Image (cartoon, rainbow, N blue to C red; front, side):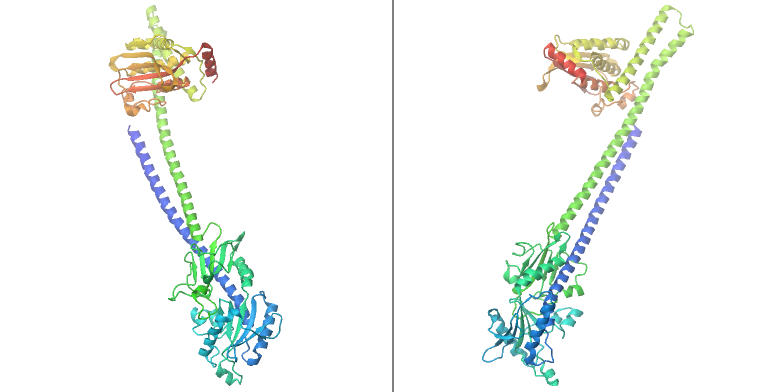
Length: 634
């Protein structure tokens, strides 16, 4: 009993330790999963931000290339500007990778009387020619005239009225801004998104012109580079998308460039319908013109997750762009929008991946818990079975020793001439025979149990009467009943239907039940044996053979164990009642082989009743014979 308590305490400790280990592993797994998801988000955000920045720089380079190529020599006369521009434009078209980017090149002289003079460079010409005022320049004309009047003839480097200095809009340490805007090759260029076009005043600083004896240009003279929207949409933007957002199997991202003032008709879209409406789950957005919010805060770039370096030179370069014409409202801004193509938006994709990883991890932990539980359960059962087997060996050894001792003593008495008279010899012979039969029955019981466990037991089935089974069982236990001094009360209903079974096996079942009643019958010394016909639900009728006693009974918590091999109640063991723990398991196995079952009703101190339930045979003799043959072959 103490050993059993120690084993139970040990199992409890193991279970508690296993639960603690699983909880710790679960918490660590949850933490690691969060860390991995965070690191993955930062890595993808960094990669996406760098791709968008590089996309933007390349896009800006395409536009700025023509501005650098058409720069005007500051030492030239105003009259030579048109020839110089025509020559440089021709040279640019021969070397550029985007010769179709420029849809038209114009020089506007807004102070020319009686009306503004427009000079246009023909596509195949070498000189500018007079032209009418383009229809899409109407909104631009008034803006440029206001700019000329405010700038004055002596300030050729100023931008349009209300324009922003691009170098000031960038980080103070941005070498790119200082190099290209602060008096560099791109100084003075502005962007008009509605046409779209690049503009620059041809005015020269008056004091500089006087010191170098060069005629100053008029502040109202402007160069306008009209960009081909179709070339931007169909060539430049697709090429940039392929360059910076392409994976091994095509574009990894859906890419769109939209104008807020023309929602529903994107400038470019990698997928049909993408960008036609506001995209709430975009992984990255960028204001291409670099315009900040009205309060001056925020960033032109928005990524689905905070990158490792939100600020710095790389982020500041992303807002590099030409200053806009002052009256270009925020609704005219161009925005780059990207969203991951495979698995949805990156934020949702990472969240789904995290949930999936957690589900798999906790599933593995659950399997670990189940495996540990099964291991503990099987270990406990193995320990219990080992203990039962040891108890069985001890019980069998004790059961074998008693008859062997009797046989050995009787044999020695006979051999040494202690017993000489014939009646005594007959008595000794009877004792030796009884003990030998007891040994034989015990060995047969063990061999039968082993054969049943190995599935090698074979039965000879035939139609039987209940009376045959009871007579064979009582005949086999008559000596035990007589020696124990028990009274047997037998009740058998007349004309009971037959059953199909093996007579020796079924009589062995009843003998085991009678033997148990003799062992545990206490001082009442009464055994009741009954055979009757009973209805068995929807399956028909059955024969019930019951063996009852008025003995010590069985506790309720032990009833579920009594049919387990080698099991013996602690109270029985303490009372030193001999037995092997195989009688009831054998009876149960035999009856179930005959398609029946064994039930028990018992209460401590009130005795026990074991009942064999055997199905009746209610067919013709030929059908009974067929069923018997089938049962024997199975």
